[in-house]
Length: 105
Image 1 (tube, rainbow, N blue to C red):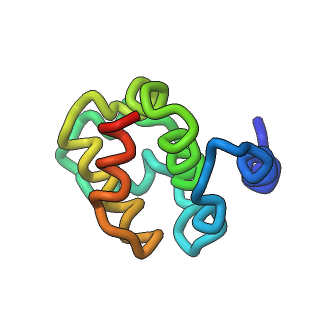
Image 2 (cartoon, rainbow, N blue to C red):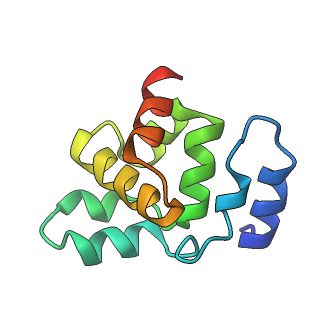
Image 3 (cartoon, one colour):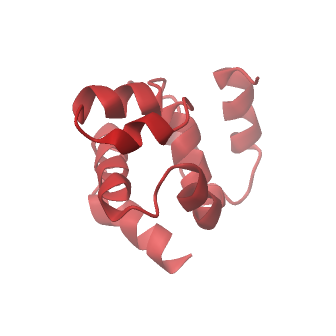
């Protein structure tokens, strides 16, 4: 398994990913599943989420939106919306930044 630093360096070298400045922001090291299950205790879909860090989720979204959808239960609009809101919060960006990118790519 890659370390977060290895992953960040790979993403930084990718010309597809425009948001590398966000990868090291505070909170991006959180695991998606852990965060989701803590915040949404009654949502059973949290068990299906991978333990990837939120930085990895962010990179997946911008590198391959369709793969993002498959890997992060994002075909469920509620899960996708919650993930986008969390990323927006951590990146100090608007929710629409993430939603529009996903929708149009």
